[in-house]
Image (cartoon, rainbow, N blue to C red):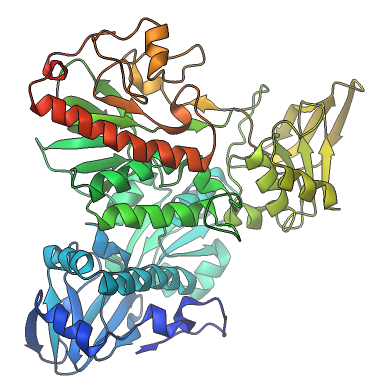
Amino acid sequence: MEAVSEKPFDPTDPYVRTAQTFPTLTEEQIERAKLLGQEEFLPKGTILFERGQRSVDFFIVLQGNIEIYEHRQNGLNVFTVHDEHQFTGEIDLFNDRQILVGGRMGEDGRVLRFNRQQFRKLTIAEPDIGEVVIRAFILRRMGLISHQQGSVVLITAKESADTLRIERFLRRNGYPLEVLNYDTACQEKAFLHNVDLRTEHLPAVYIHLDEKLLHNPSNLILAELLGLVETLPDNHVYDVAIVGGGPAGLSAAVYAASEALDVVLIEAEAPGGQAGTSSKIENYLGFPTGISGQALAGRAQIQAQKFGATIALPFSVSEIDCQTQPFTLTLDNQAKIRTKTVVVASGARYRTLNCDHSFDNAGVYYAATAMEGSVCQNEPIIVVGGGNSAGQAAVFLSRHASHVHILVRGQDLKATMSDYLVGRIKASGRITLHTQTEIAALKGDKHLEEVTWYNSSTETMETHAIRHVFLMIGAVPNTQWLQNCLTLDEKDFICTGLQLVEHQAWKLQRQPTIFETSVPGIFAAGDVRSGSVKRVASAVGEGAIIISQVHQFLSAQNGGDLLNQQLPIH
């Protein structure tokens, strides 16, 4: 194996970890794999798969080698060669999205070919091989991202909300991306020489394959043209549809798919939810050095897809018909999904400021990842909020910003933030806590330029030239799409379990299960549920528990129980 790269040596580069990124299977593993695949002789130059194809086969090299290449404006660039007993593929072999790279025989040779069904059987029936393959796939995608291989080019002119939206969408979905400003792109990229691209057309996305140039595309259009959208079968009835790809939804998808349920997860932007925007989660069990929310969500997504879950994005559910079985979910593109059960894990979003403004993604942000950190490099910033998310953001961003101002309305952080974060904030010389303080006004043209805050203790106003504000305050449940289908509490969170009895919203003789809503067969988990603990670990636990309740419902339904009758209308 060799991985070709023009980047200087980096010990964190996945391509440096050759034994894990490009492993060689043992003779004994090869013999077991032969029982599930087809052995073929293929001449040099045979195309095995091309960028843009879906559901491609998996190959193990028995003799010869396979070249992996990307499409560039000046032709094909071979950047990896798989030798004997090595294998092809990366994480898109676990889904039906368009693949990012091509593969061909580098010389005459023999291979083991596996179609998708055979590949899935191999990874499940031979767990030691499956472990090697999954680890390699994850590292290979990280390598593609790091080296911008199989990537698209985002061309920008200046700070803009749409530039940040597109970059966030691609990065959170793990898509390789090269970001260039307009002047650099015009000088370095030959594909722009014959294109009438003006600054008013920006941001623009260039796709090397088919040489497409997209002017400020929506997330959906971008996802469709990059092949991130998977085709959902017509008139198909799923066992369970999960709305929302945060920790609760991903957990439910993993457990449902691993227990042979036919499951689809619907996500509006990218897996991870609010947790996916966290730079580092340090108190999640099993990760003593912490893990970023995006990394945790990415692993969970692969885990769910490995077991056969379908992840449909970027779609929102606009309507639900919960009066008859099977339930019908209508997506924002008017597509319909029919399902026997529903898990509502649509989460909550941070509250906005009381003052009106138009600076979302143009100075006002609701996430604190490396991408946002690069935006505010060496500038003063504000973090609004007193919870763990705000504390994690402040500590992380203090490594990028010149100074971090935390604004909270309370008198201290002890009641709302974990002690380890409070200690770090106090110990940092680059973070200042402003208690009993809130933002009064934001000013600027197309981008935020100035912030005024008010201290209720001193009754004073202060105005500062600050261009970046991170909002992590409160929680507004994403339940507007339910349209009176389910019983909600006074803050619009979903009532479940014994809460329904207290609200006199349960109509059946049996007691509701813990996470069951007022409509039998519809369950709620995570931040969207009334009374939930706003922690990643608890959301994961709820998602796992719900699947046992889904099984109970489906068993009763198949047995002709009362649950199979027309559902009560609320």
